[in-house]
Length: 465
Image (cartoon, rainbow, N blue to C red; front, side, top):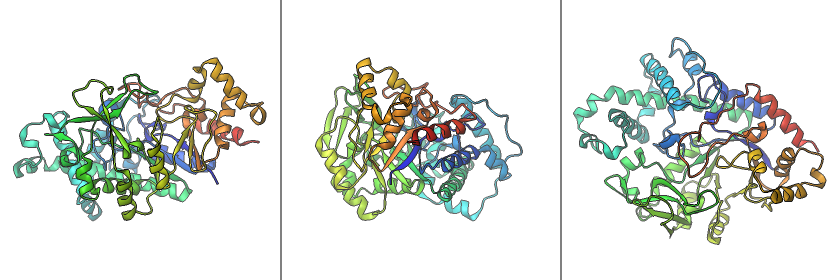
């Protein structure tokens, strides 16, 4: 039976303190999902946001973004004396939120008593790596690590480590409390029978603990990328997309059985029930751009050994649940790789309407990279609008065109349908515009305090026969 899900970034929840978090706002949303028979919640990457506040330029493959800490849960745990003044609902203002959450975490840390659980948490390799990287980064004015002075590169002296010991411990506390809050949220999801679908970027951020501590896994020289990831000119951009992420050293990875990548996926599987891997096609072929190029135009396709990768992955983790982001103008070998390993793909109606979907597909009207359904439809040429009206005649007639599109997506064959929350709420907001950096990307947030009623009404209409 096909499942129904909703795409909503954690940060887009209507929390009281400027950004959605792991606290009451998320728990309320889980109740809304359960009350409306929604079985899947899809979110965007939870890692520390990077350049342009993008969750796809994460500073770590394992760490969580500290802005998602819940002040209410800190207060309930007795770690802060009082709750801060509430922030009016609106788009996310990152600098203000970062300052607020950091001040609360400082207070919480001053009241925190270390436990054996905390000490065990701190012994994990990724915790040691990320917290050292984050401490060094802040000690260097948050500059990219390739600009840090020598004493902060790779193996710092014991004197330097001792000097920053308390700050490193504070960073460990931040990650610990985030994981405690997230774990409690995951338990509530499990109790409600709702699966959490996480979004894993194919590439890591260049200014990340991954590149800092594992440079041999990337094509970099002294931390500087020799080659840059992206895609050639496409539907979204005439110049292509130059993402800026360093390219992986796939030869080195293959020699050790893809250990770094497998660990990364294992960590994601601990967080999520389903993992949507963004830019799946790069397991087959990836676009390699010289770092000196200002655009993505002058790159070249490089063939990857995706079959060897997935054999190594499923030999070690046979129960991993992956969804392949198989969008774009792809060569047949990409689909062959997807189908050989029995991975669900994606069908996005904004790219193909009407659509012939497979029973293995996940159906979307649009993803986080698309305009809202209403914006998309109103901006279509009249001829394309007429084609959609024609397809929605008959069994879909008598409905508002937007309800009819939602209903059409609901009826298509597939393992699940995922609706962007804006489309269910009738909004025109957009989460991200590919090929652009900065505001208003990644700033969307639900602003209607009564959103649950609107969502319920929409779902009842489109489910009615």
